[in-house]
Amino acid sequence: MHELSVCLSLMQQVEQIAVEKNARRVTRIVLNIGPLSGVEPELLRHAYPLAAADTVAAEAELVMKSADIVVRCSQCNAESKATANRLLCAACGDFRTRVISGDELTLMSVELDTA
Ligand SMILES: [Zn+2]
Image (cartoon, rainbow, N blue to C red; front, top):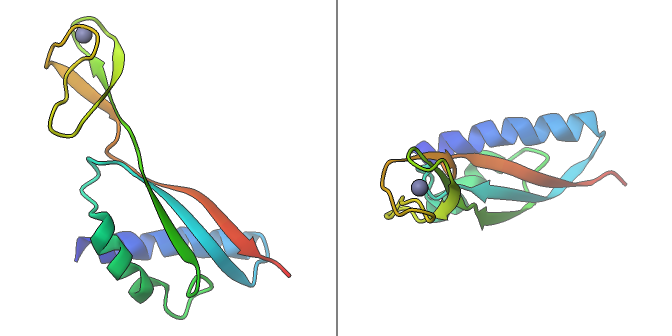
């Protein structure tokens, strides 16, 4: 399952942060998921407890936010927001655009319990 390996690599990042900050527990993890990242938030939510079991983040709340898709137009060079099934330039309407944001999964923030 793709989402499980995504979760596992995420856990490595989270555990590293927890170790650096001397945290005992991770209480909250906020992710920004690009609609073009290929990650299905619902599957990620199911995979998360498997990946987080027996880690510092076992009881952390997982918050998933949907990132914007941003494209750059190859014709007028404008940057504009787009939707996954309509990657058009908002300035001139051309379809020859390049996705510059929206295809990544980003760890936005981690809340730690250092008490
Ligand atoms: Zn354009």
